[in-house]
Image 1: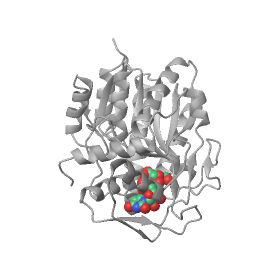
Image 2 (image 1 turned 180 degrees about the horizontal axis):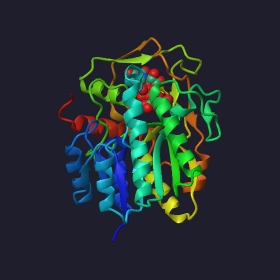
Image 3 (image 1 turned 90 degrees about the vertical axis):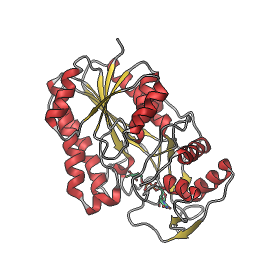
Image 4 (image 1 turned 135 degrees about the vertical axis):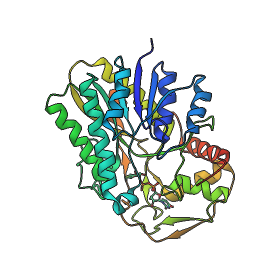
Length: 341
Ligand code: UFG
């Protein structure tokens, strides 16, 4: 019998790609998703990719009773990967309670359920947002966690802290806090990818929607930063490379006996400016993008990228895909999407 892994938010962007990687590595993923930020037809696509329909439970992870009912069915479960969360930075400023309630509330439900059913392996979706306005451009896991620049960021800092406190309080837990940099790209098959609701906040979906004619033009938020070309620098990682790290993290947790909590940065280790990304998108897809340089967006950090040495050492993980691959896959995915809300 394959090892069962519960994947909350398994129909979401990173979740769905992780489900495929888990399946390819011989796990049986069990998805918990309430489809508030995802589409049920992604499950059909997962079935196409895997050759079998994944097990799915339509559950809101804030609903402790419903979550525990699902956990009760998988007592042989090997671990939990907890993706389910709201993630729009701007929305979190307008509606902070929604973010604390969902992101922090869901984690508490998951931790209680894990305790009740004696599950010990937890992989938690965190973000480089915990580094805030970092004094360092290349951040390591030792770089200080700053006070968050948004309620969303604060929920990630809070969740990380809750997991550590639970382990100190002797919940038998082995946990990885995975701090993602900027996930982009889509599955090379073009069958799954990012599905932003409404107008995208993030750069790459805005670019692909502009290229498709859904948006008139892209505005580059600020051209007067202290960077070589004046635009922000980020660390853009292919979602499939990111997804694969979750499988390795889970295997690592399973191989350990004693409770622990560790943090890993997941990025490429390479900084890319907004203009470099646009040029690469144009080159690999042989098209021209309509864009202008506009004002800075409030809350944007000037430049940040990952030192990924630790993830390499601990998980023996590194990225397979290039920036160009990711941008080709994003465009291929976008072209295949029939409708946007
Ligand atoms: N950008 C534009 N125009 C756009 C959208 C984005 O120029 O229309 C720029 C931003 O200013 C930034 C870069 O593209 O320089 C990347 O922006 P994203 O919104 O795609 O990503 P962020 O780096 O702002 O945000 C990401 C995650 C968040 C996380 C944050 C932490 O999406 O979840 O990193 O820094 F909180």
